[in-house]
Length: 166
Figure 1 (spheres, helix red, strand yellow):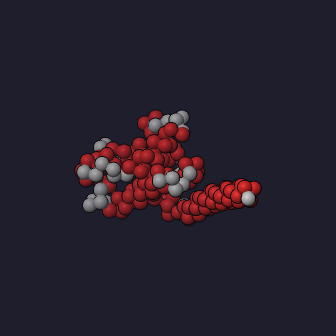
Figure 2 (figure 1 turned 45 degrees about the vertical axis):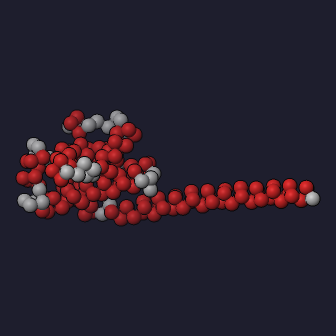
Figure 3 (figure 1 turned 180 degrees about the vertical axis):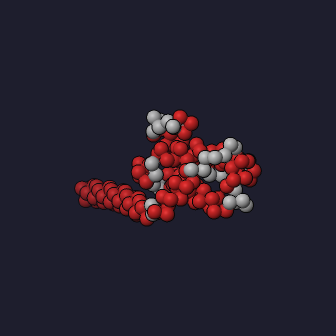
């Protein structure tokens, strides 16, 4: 009788271990599948229009401070330029959300969005973002983008700051 009970306990334990292993493998495969799906969705975002918008926003360099930027590119004076700026900023903010929430792997994010582009875009527009945080009384405005920037700086410390780029 003791042998039957012992065998029963051992088989139950083995069954639990097999179920746990199966569940773990299923979760891992689901996570990888979700990341692949995310990557393919983002690749569709790399259209010619996206690249044009990115290049256009990247050239918003003729301003001295946040007030000057508002006078040149603010929503009320230049809605087209502002829309392009907001589009690019929100893409990086979304990438930061995906990274912060661990929905996407850090290596995948920086394959989709090169670290040097993330770093330079943040450094270029940090004064604007910080000014908006103050004006809107919204201290977490574009915080995921800032998180993405900080991760890029940690992973790629050799990328020079925007102020040192010729």
